[in-house]
Each structure stands twice: as C-alpha cells, then as structure tokens.
Image (cartoon, rainbow, N blue to C red; front, top):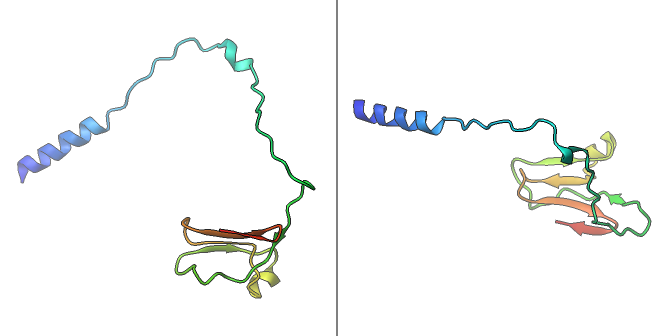
Length: 98
C-alpha cells in the first residue's frame, strides 16, 4: 500500500509540472495588423423569424428551454429547448432545426 501511494504521488508530481514559456519581444509589428474575414452570409431580409413550438417529447430529464415571455413559458410555447447539450430544437423561418 505504501508503494502504491508513493507511485501515485510521483505520477501526480510529474503530471502537474507546468512548462514555463519565455517571453520574447513584447512589442510585435503584427499586433497592429487587422485581418479582414472573407466569409459572408446571405440572408434575404436580414431578419430571422423565431417561432414557438410545443415541448419536444424526445427531451427527458435534465433539459434547458426558453420562451419569449412568461406567459408563453407557462403555456409551453418555447423558442429553444435542449437536453443537456446533446440535442437542441429551434424553429427558424418556419423550419424545424434539430
């Protein structure tokens, strides 16, 4: 048992060793350069319609769901629902997104 504790302690000491990085030149000429992103998104009107939907039956136990207002929440009209990060549901521009 004593050897097991010594072995585990030595593994932890080696695993927690941080690599020290050296700081080279603090002023860099590249820091003032701004890169223009070439990606573009095409939207027809520029606005996305977020619609309500009833609570999905696939979601069980731990979940997260949002509504536009308190009354929508009480009437179970949600705009977003997910099951702890595995599956998410939204209805955007009349299309169901899973």
